[in-house]
Amino acid sequence: MISGIQIVLMGFSVVMVFITYNYYRRKNLEKRDLLIWVAVWVVLFLAALFPQSISFFVQNLHIERGMDFFTIFGFVFLLIVVFVLYVTVFKMQSKIEAIISAISQKEKHRKK
Image (cartoon, rainbow, N blue to C red):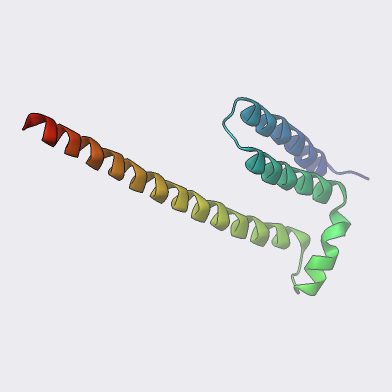
């Protein structure tokens, strides 16, 4: 029997697939990003639909409950996302600094 939380998670997953696809269609995501995020939402949907499927991981990792597994997995996933965002922002900052430096050099030569 499907519980209320399972229905909420499955609905959330479906909505997020739709939102992710819309971002891709508007060219706000690359194809690689689309595939990664759709895979995340599909895994969440399947884990909500078949909660007993994660019991293999829970038992092998010696975790007490399935919800603890999702909490740990979610925390690790968020750490990975924050790291990727940090690296992306650092690359953008370096590019912006290079552009500003090039513009200032052109203006410096133009004033002479």
